[in-house]
Image (cartoon, rainbow, N blue to C red; front, top):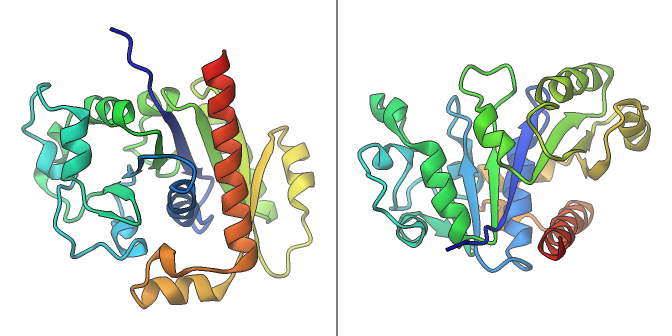
Length: 245
């Protein structure tokens, strides 16, 4: 029988410091008001930051390495229920990295998770990372390339977009404004010939909240909250179009 899958969104940093993990966390947190079940998945094996960003590093629940010996018999509901969560967002992260990492059936787990979640947000590493999965990316409904509003950021974004163009269904841009940059996000989007999905402003208070253990739920800054709410609405609209088609 045909199972309808929810939306899946890949968040890909064009370069280090682009704010991709923050966008992924913020999007998942704000999307929970629109989508019934939301999962946030960490595919960046080099850092274990999503637990910390959500304030979940000490919470019980299964991490990636716990799935290394599982067969295809596990259901999406079982996976979803086993994950740590906060604010109605289920989180699949690495916790402590182990040697079992290589034997995890990632695509299988993600497919099953997508069957029970209305939205799955995936935090990817940079395209140049050796663990970057083009297979998982090609299955996503939307790819958000995140970049800083800088000349170097634009150059990195251009390379990243060119690298994934043959794999991604839809590519859009999230631009993080940085103090002192005169580059306009709309101009950057035109330059890269890529639709602008959202603009995120740099704010030191965001990292302060996370450092203090409040997680993204503690961030209630007008512009940041508004822009991520709009991005979640946009993805909801894309899902409506998909269901009509």
